[in-house]
Image (cartoon, rainbow, N blue to C red; front, side, top):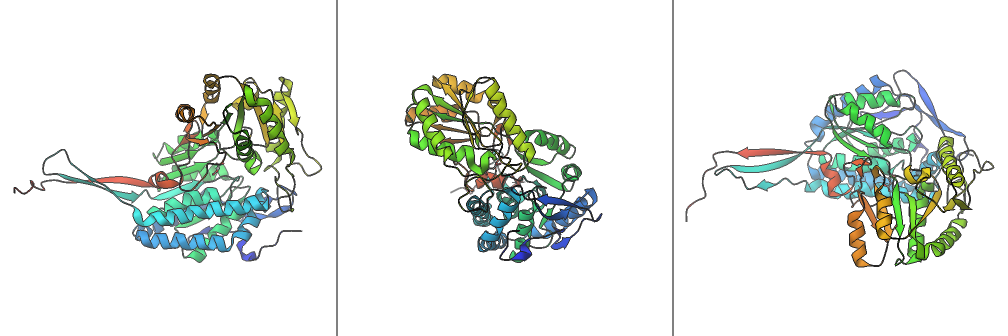
Length: 495
Ligand code: SIN
């Protein structure tokens, strides 16, 4: 039976939100969206094409001319109202997330709060957009800066956090006065569309937020967003491969760009760590969203002195998981998003096994539950030759590597072309500073496996991309700094 919404009007079928109205694709084409747990059809969404996308950009550009001049306080109130509506409709939003993404209801509710908090946080920043006064090096000149909204923004978001990835981009964009065309993920569009409905109810002016959908036409939509000269900024969360392509496309019009791309997070447990805290951190970091986040631990390095104890305690905790349909009571972990994701996990497990690792728990698909389910898996005896050491698994598999020295583990941890998040557990204050400074990542969790917070800057280094989301740094991504020099302002008065 299909899940029920308290407010069924939040489920938008066959329409996108453009210029304050619900519209179909001009071609009339749609694509189907399926529940990853049951494989059943949830509904259909418009297959927007290049022409539809250009129209949405035009409306966003028209809206920018007025929205940019609203006061910070006015923009703040709009975001705050949108936040309130998200919280009032949290149960329905969570239902949509579980339905189209598969994560258990409790996690989906957690995501709704996390997502809404971006609107709350940025609503509080909107009235505090300050420029600078700069002492000039030229006598008689006065220099100051104005922070201006960059313009129309193209936002491209992934399926793993159907609510939080879009609010993390829209929050700062609207706070500073930008307008947006947001391309919802093809796998999980209904949450984004429900958010658009709430935007409408919150009084977001027409054209300021446009939410469009596509599946087969995704490359064509991306091409328009990244090449249309009216779009002045692209923010993308997704794979490194797609990020590189978008960056190339953006070069023709030199757009401002934020890329939050793939990770391969090292998770290090030193001998001096509190092992129970480290086990909890590893469970949180590795198995959040069934391992489908960019900041999930991907390589768990445990120092020799505590390796056996950690393996035992960690495996016991993972054994307690219950995998199943996210709507079922007691289920702790849902399906993966599709069978291709399951195949990748399976490849990594078999590769590790073939090269000598030992599967301590799990290690197989769960066909009785459906094609998208995989057992939560723990593997010991990992080595750097195994695929999981260099590729992001994006699934519920924890590979444990044994290490001897700090120097050795830091070398391994940094031996990757990406650098999003890294975690380590230690009670030695000098080591804490040393290791935090040495890890080549954009975000470090020390004695915690959960680092995501709207108030903290989220983003990577190396091929994990650039730009920061959330926090004050996230605001700057949607602004330009205009400098104004006043000449001939005279000399200071003599006393
Ligand atoms: C991501 O997977 O890209 C985001 C994860 C988060 O916000 O915690």
